[in-house]
Image (tube, rainbow, N blue to C red; front, side, top):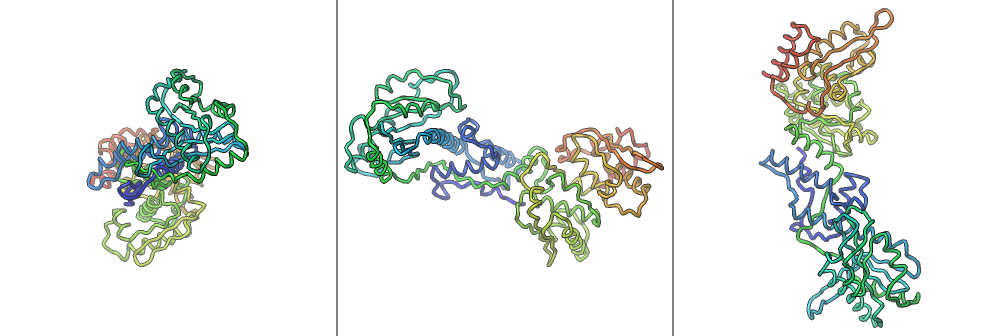
Length: 535
């Protein structure tokens, strides 16, 4: 089994991971899960839906597979990534707003790290400023605070006492950078703005308790009011264009690379393949179906005729389809022994099995979806055509899944094809087709009469009656009593329920409840089921 989740993230025990790497890798992961992942989503309390989904499913899966568990994130690691994403979203939204003001006399910086000793003689220390604006009315150090609150007011006192130290250190760090470069710093040059952002992105609120902060020479603002606050300025001084350029050069030269590292930092290594495979693992958790027995693909593949393939080759073909799921452009390679084991093949004649696979590969090579299907030296290799990659990747609601173990127990080619089609339409409880289309789908040659086809359909219904309750069909006839169409009906069912294997009593009860079957037909259906599933 492909264990791609063994290394879906790395920790600080394995490599140096700075905060920016956590944020960038988490955002990349969430954009795969949801291409509409925006900064307001990143700001919210549910800002890691994709990562949390993976972690929760793997945690549940590990409880089923205790012998070789997958790594999962600790709550501290989840909280750390959540907090970093939240803070980054707030800063990015502020940066987007401030960039609307940029011109020759308004310069905007984001995530500024300046050297600052905090009164210490020894050691290398620094101070991080979320956003910094240099404009004609002064230098504004902006501290972004993202908080989870509701209502029409935010009490600024909730930011105490840490906020007072933060704004003081920001101001002093900027002053120190300027003074170290020989620049004279008047008292009203460097100022502070605290921007409060609600995690639910609502902006219709006001502040109370901000008097102490204003006495420190700072202002508090919502995101929506920020550009007005900066444009109008406060405690104003006046900077000429050349002074703004000088200050900008000093700040730029003084900046340090931000490589801050927290103990719980992780780097996510997720791809589309991980999210595709997780669908199978979630179904494993829900239905207790081994991942390797879950055949998953886009429903369009059900329309591929199985002409030229016997029942065993059909089993092998769909095992190969299952292995191709979520692999992207990657070539898959399976040995004859792997295929034999996956298909439950019991024959002892290895040469005969090799011929079987060789013929299967030849049929697959002629199918439109495969770029290459080759069997040589006991090894089958398969690659897909690029245009058909969506049929095997990037799971959508149009994908279907079914249990390969159940499928392999169905012996008739026609029953196998109808099983797949009924799974596709399980929540509708009906399958309609013209009779020529059905013959084509089943791979029945034109030389066979319709009476032969109907006989084969009757045999297929007996094999499928255990799985599709009240299964029956109705023929539509046209001129000269010729069969022109067919409609299969059965009780609607959640298609994923067909991933599970239930007790024999459930399947036998479905046979007994089928009013369309005569008593002799029911006896034959029971005998077929007991022979294939209970022996």
